[in-house]
Amino acid sequence: MELGGAFTIFLALCLSCLFILLAWKRINKGGKLPPGPTPIPFLGNLLQIRTDAIFQSFMKLQEKYGPVFTVYLGPRPVVILCGHEAVKEALIDQADDFSGRGEMATIERNFQGYGLALSNGERWKTLRRFSLTILRNFGMGKRSIEERIQEEAGYLLEEFRKTKGAPIDPTFFLSRTVSNVISSVVFGSRFDYEDKQFLSLLQMINESFIEMSVPWAQLYDMYSGVMQYLPGRHNHLYYLIEDLKDFIASRVKVNEASLDPQNPRDFIDCFLIKMHQDKDNPQTEFNFKNLVLTALNLFFAGTETVSSTLRYGFLLLMKHPEVEAKIHEEINQVIGPHRMPSVDDRVKMPYTDAVIHEIQRLTDIVPMGVPHNVIRDTHFRGYFLPKGTDIYPLLGSVLRDPKYFRYPDDFYPQHFLDEQGRFKKNDAFVAFSSGKRICVGEALARMELFLYFTSILQNFSLRSLVPPADIDVTPRISGFGNIPPTYNLCLVAR
Ligand code: HEM
Picture 1 (cartoon, rainbow, N blue to C red):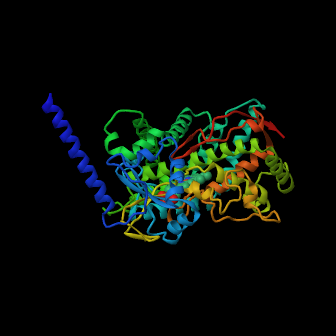
Picture 2: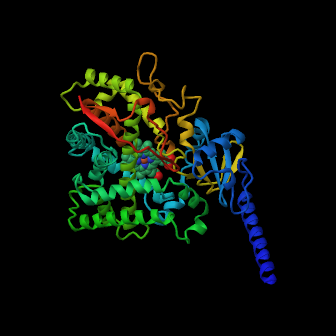
Picture 3: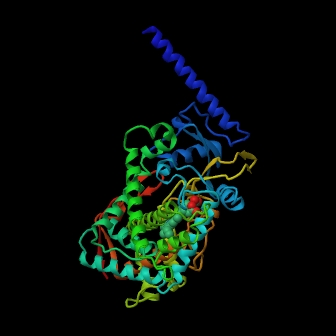
């Protein structure tokens, strides 16, 4: 027994030394990382970080260490950037250095560096260029993206009319309609709202976004090296994404069987044509894996972000009925009751445009941003970040930067209006991030948000089931994403 005990202590000592050595090596791999709380072996800065409020923990550390600091997520050092200036200096002024994608352990097992959103180097460049071209071309094709959104908004309005003003949870009303827009680009067609498979895909996407944001996921991000081998809730996300991958792979097979290279119908067809053209090139990035995973990136990101923003937006408007009333007024003046809203109306509707920006600012869909890393040894603000150092640009800290927003925590559309009531740009509006990795769906998302908000409010008024003062707008879960609270509302025909 005694020998066993001594051996355990000896083993623990050896392991501790090993971890200290590894941590020390990481700190000193030629780098001079920004200051931060002292990590302990293997656990890193777990004692300073609450996994159920990770963004808030970082904001607290910023008070002590300033806008640029280092934390250890487990054994891994990550440089945190807070506020507009620091994020801009990195993502814009040194855009190329900071253009790498950092580690996202929760979903790395599914993506393994493939697909647009999680890839790096030449693979990322190729996939990004290709995806942007397709998103643009399908906007300029026979039917514009604007027409597709208008048509989808029409279907949503029909669904809302059927509720006859009864209370509903808007979640899947919104995700079905929004998802159909990106579906028509990626898969060439929309889904019927009653399609059971469609609803189950949307449920999987919604659940995955939640799973990426719960405290388990933050813990997994820190200790994936060990946790990936353990059973537990963190594995649920892996299976959800595998199911989504299987669905996309099955759609690719359907496209392959009916492909006409002269008449590409959608993103998948265009990618398949490229694969065919490059079939003799062993280096090509146009392969099955990149096709499935990029299509999944677009389908996933194109669904959850816009629908969560609309859902959060409804809640904020119900809490501030005077703002909703002003939007109704602007719609009456510019669009009237009879014709559909169009993108051209946006410049004539500065108040609505400002409200949508303010909704996005407070929704703050990915408060810590999507991790970046430096693609080469990088000098930044007097520090030296070795190639491969992970970076968290805290977009939430920019969106609430008190130097740029007068009332950072309040819903105040005037943040985006000048004295004359004209729309006023604000450089700290980084809901889509900035620099080389800026969201590829930005133009599409902005179009969708404007057309959905105006179409819905042209036809309906929002009614909360509780008095505005009692509406709680705190996110239900806050981690990788901010998940809006669950609520019911009534849509009353105007
Ligand atoms: C309100 C809506 C949206 C918001 C707030 C949003 C926000 C973001 C953010 C913050 C990033 C991370 C950028 C970075 O790494 O610094 C991102 C990346 C991305 N978004 Fe969006 N997004 C939205 C809608 C969309 C839509 C509609 C699509 C689909 C077309 C899309 C596809 C992507 C993709 C593929 C990336 C990865 C880009 C890359 O790694 O190069 N997003 N988005």
